Length: 120
Image 1: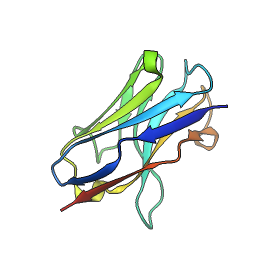
Image 2: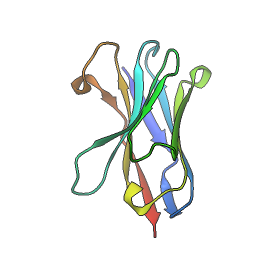
Image 3: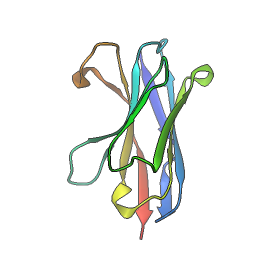
């Protein structure tokens, strides 16, 4: 059973930084795509960043490109999201996701989410 546990959210002032962590367990994740999504109140869940567990290639949403960095530590089975130059519009619940090889969005495993609040 895949389990994803996020941590590291909190309240930060605009311009500040936070690092989110996602501890993954339940299987080996070779070939998986690991990602971060976020959902603000009244809005749909949106893609933030993804990283290939094997190889480490990354992709980012335009809104966070240059400010956020996704990384993973294979030894710790943990994925990170380093967020810098935070803006009030980054306020959302951030979810970690794991997608099996060749699977669609509907097959994502999800964590429970961690709240990030950026004050102006």
